[in-house]
Image (cartoon, rainbow over all chains, first blue to last red; front, side):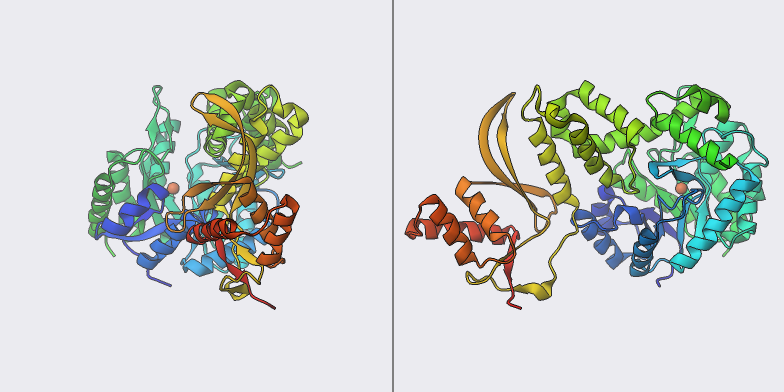
Length: 274
Length: 248
Ligand SMILES: [Fe+2]
């Protein structure tokens, strides 16, 4: 298993050409979503093979549904485990959300209520998944736009409870922390100070969309904003130097702009204590 | 039903229903505009996946009819796959079942537009492949080994500029050996019959073409041999013809 450190970039079809031929030296690894590659031939198969020849790979799932109610599909878990082993990822991350209800997959990151029942459901599922996949699971804090029903705790406490009741690691998304704070009138710095920093194995940064009414949506389609860079510094001051991933899923700029973001993230990361 | 189940079902109904149900919104509470954000996110992602995979179908059906299918599909039979790429085939199957014979009215080319879109989608993504241990060098005395990811689609209609004209033919869709893009080869009627006969994985090529020629009352003269050799060479270069199945 290759050592993952420094700054990484999400492997996306529009980026792979530049990634393979003129990646900046500070780009050290790539993040891959298994759902985009499993059981798929052609371009995606070759893209993954090329990237693996050049970079260590960390996997980031889209569909494990850490808060889903139905038991995970055993056939999918077997195929996922084989995929994770084939790319040599040190851990597998997915989102603190649900995505499927009564067999219907909604293909989005849907918000869990911050309740004790949700904590138990997620913690139980994380343990089950770690057994089935044979790897540590890292849970990622999501951007959420509305809370379903009444909450019994804050988001930071919810995340803390999930981590304390399971063996999960934390994939800390500082852009999501910022988006949530702005949308819900809370303090992102306070959130970052309250999460268990010793459980963080990876950080995400990304850009987001701001609507005319000021409401923010986590699109990964814009440049990283100044406040998120600042939050990253704060997060790293608590976690120490952990791998940082730049997520870009749309609105792709000239590659030099992404390379400059990677360099900037690397400079911040190098200033953090090891 | 637990509290968590109830809240999750309410979100699903808000996102997938023909309209967000008032009782679900009441259960979720908060600003309904924020639940509309989720509805828009879910629907936009799926809509884009369908438009990307089914451009001919969309053009043939028109936005209103296609949009109506989309609304009913999400409401009645939402995707049961975790893979976004499998949503278009599920939608296509639902449209065929829901429309039945009516799918070919008023545009008789709509069913084949859908078939062609789905074939192209399959060819682009398929990971079907032959086990190299099954393969031998091409021989006329062995069954032909064709790439299982390719598709042949018989169509009656052709888009020519703004018009749709009747022009029956068979299209062979396959992946470009190095680029991975989907390429289309138009086959003659005889070429299509020959490939159908050769693609059963069991009949030696000589017997397969003999059967086709005798059904068509043709003989394997010099001109045929030359044309057939040309077809095989083309298919080998395109990596559709991979060799022969080795004798067991
Ligand atoms: Fe993220």
